[in-house]
Image (tube, helix red, strand yellow):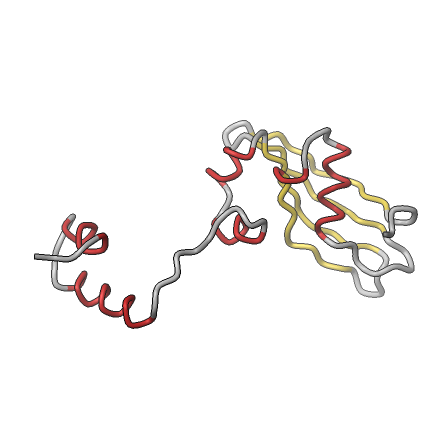
Length: 132
């Protein structure tokens, strides 16, 4: 692990009470080393903000040209329930907190065509079960 040389700094820290989270820009200084894994960044941020890594969501990391410094964004939620409520599904699936329902291509197309035949609020009913 690269604990000895990698330094994590946060800036533009903001507490977002409406979304029950703290949000910040994360600067990772890693001279002469490869970019840190997001899991390592989450663990270090968890130690900094005295929380668990499962409520921290890091994304949008870009390494500066020449290396040595990476900048990204981090969200620290108050609890896992708030994270599941407010985070987009694709970010939850990266953490293994959301599983996209799998259906075959043919099923999706058949459902789409059934939905096209009805109007208004009946469209929701068509998607759940068989239409009579």
